[in-house]
Length: 269
Picture (cartoon, rainbow, N blue to C red):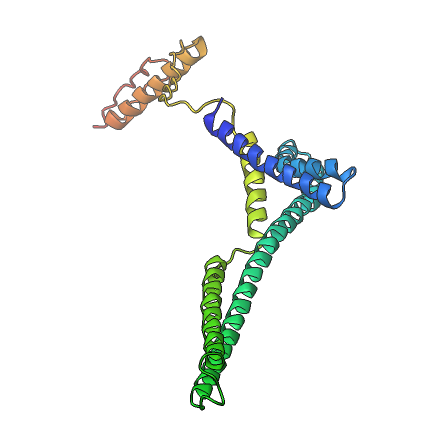
């Protein structure tokens, strides 16, 4: 079997099989019922309809070929939109996860800002009570309480900063170059259509690497002249001799090859 034909059919079958499984899975998750069987059947039919349309056109069935081409439009559209929906759902889940990570980063940054503000207020309060007298604030109990509050606030700032770093490490940055949702389904459908179509259209015989033998030329066999042809040839030869004699000395040789009688010459003197 032609290796190119086998490779194209195998590639197209794999692509069509992926489309059939995706159509089945989509119908099972959304609709169920008989559509679970109808979806892969339509996906498989859309992969072989181009070849059937070409064969119908070659067999001079123009109307059938046009009908098959028109049937291909809704069949291919069904497979394309089903695959596009599956890709959209997959991308939507990934985008939601990335959005949640970015939201976690925003919340961590907001908590860090609040912790910094609280630590600043605690340190200012501790500084204020240190300037007062011992009667107003006991160094053992009063100042220790304010110092402990400031230290706890600084500790919360450190924890918030670590939370921000952890959230940013998990959050993925959006790529500036995004593939559209329809690109992968379109590529999958085209690979299935073109591979199966071209594979079935190729000849099953493997291409030969030998130099083709030269085409024998016809041999011309000489034809034996017939009686009529011999007479015709003799007549042409006699005409040729007569014309040559006339051009030479004015004498005419008849067709039968006998010279005419000479006339006596009369002396005019």
